[in-house]
Image (cartoon, rainbow, N blue to C red):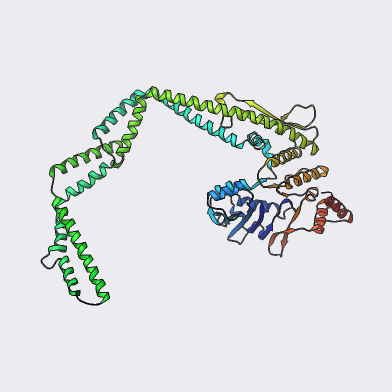
Length: 553
């Protein structure tokens, strides 16, 4: 549940702190007061696109914080815990937008991506916008609507995954068959190239070893001279080797009864041991250091072969082993083309069967959900003053070759607004007001099926008035009794149905204008509903009517 929203320096909002409770909260106010700004700001915390123009003029950045109580939301708590973002039953989403357009996102105080904001937001809140009815005119939204109503989203995702797996292997098989025409020429070329690599027989890591050994053998005189000089300096130099000088220094401290000097003597003893070990290492290295012209020539020849092959294939010598493996694998596929194709064909057939089976089951589930959706929308339309209206969900089967990730059907919503008329596409029969009511009926029904704890309706009652508006208010109040609902409205009948009432006001000091939100008590609600119902001049009759509306809710 959304418990609080804090907005700073956003649009015409300077600073705003709003607390929310359960049930239906209605938000009202004069046109232009900033009612929808609150919803837009909340949408930013849910991952919506940021716009630098929304930062209040003169401010460096806008800052929006939404606090949710997730103590009873297992899915949200699991999501947060999995990412180590849980915080004692709270989920705090924060979004900052700079005047330069850059934005930052935080979940429970930790920097997060917009993708994560959207993911957790989907578990917390669902916003129905004031122009959402327009989406009903697009056929691509109809299938998603049926899936949402029927709780088929997971099943639809599984079908989409099965389709992509089938299509991927099917494309791989097609590419294999397409390449069959020039397979022989490619195979001959690959055989020649692989034979070159086989003759070289370069092993993983061998080039680096050869390079290191070549450097050592090519510089053997320099290495010997450096070793002999180092050995002499530490062990047998005529002017006093390092080991002898250290020994004399330690001997000078013998017999001195002083703690600090004893520590120095011990360190000198340790240094003598290290110097002797270094001398032994140098002696053994010199014993093994021998010139080997034949080995040097052999390495130079092998390195030359590596350079030539690498230059031929335009790669670095270190990449030859990996290239050898790739060319060998491709040659093997072409050499055993028939076997590989048969295996691919079997895999394609298996994946096709899995997709078709899953798609058919999804189609059946969609048809069942569609029948129920048609019935419930019809009932809601009657309540909304469209008694002769009915919704029909039309399924058009697709040939298997035309299948999509969505399945084996196309789905379109048709509507008949009058008894006896055949259903037709929404775009052809519904006016703006009718479309708004159809959309509202669908939204209310889908919201009743939703597991999202908070629902927001932003002026979805556009184009509705009179007794129908009262029905809409009661529908939203019914939704509020099973969860949390926020509704931005301009209708008095809807506002009267709220459990809580917030009024957005625009205030000005003559220099700047800002929005404020006020929680209304009973008397203030009567005044506000009277204003909404009767206009600027509030008469005693308007107040009586507002009292009656509140009493009737």
